[in-house]
Length: 333
Image (cartoon, rainbow, N blue to C red; front, side, top):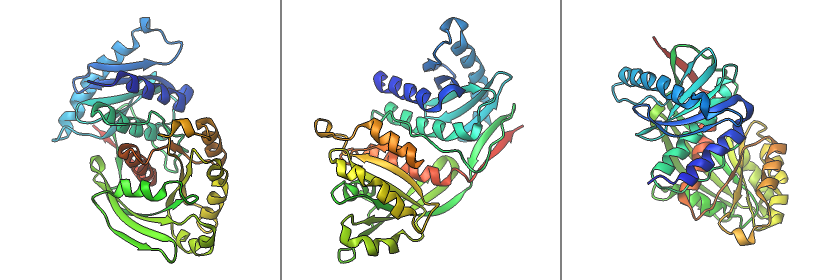
């Protein structure tokens, strides 16, 4: 049984995140039958847009499936005279369709489609999921739309991602990474120099791409500030983590951001509001967190180290953001 509340909340967040470019969201099965939908405010159901989209989607899905032996295609796009459509698989049985205006930026929509589809898969599987969609920055490589059915591909191969976990002591960094690592565990803890090093890989099967994390869990205490800088060097990504029940850890996030970027100005960061399960003790609101993330120009996510699904989602989002610039279009003639 699908959790309709979670599904509706996720679709609402998509509209809030993408803004005016989005006309409709449609979740369909492999035959093109509508499972859920949401229209832009002001668009009437009487216009029969959803029915029209379903009629358009069905033959496209059948053609895509016939092009690939497995029946899987990952993510693709298709332009009409009035709209730009992005298709993204959401598990084995469902497809997410974003219906945007014809002038919408395809490269801007792609990350939102991917992450929303990942969250839909969790909802269909009955797993925990946060409805929040982070604000993604624009990408370096632009995708061009086409009136042919096109598949969005990521460069194949294995990428190594040195990742730093930043934040004050006690914000939950070690618990977060331990949840993520779980059974695939490789660790080298060096207590005297204030860092724990762990490794794990994430596979994006739809693109035959692997991201191998080397995670540096940095001690937050002030006495380790000097040696921490050694481990920031060469970092390509990281989390800025604070505890929503301790405002001082939030107040220090800008300092952590500056420290992370001191030697690696291009390091890709995501802000993490942790311990959201402690609702009655929360001192930092979601609005405050999002405002600071916007100021720092980085995505914002909320997690609880007690929930492995949400933690996994945070790491998978970071891996996806890392590989997203290595993408291209394959037109199906």
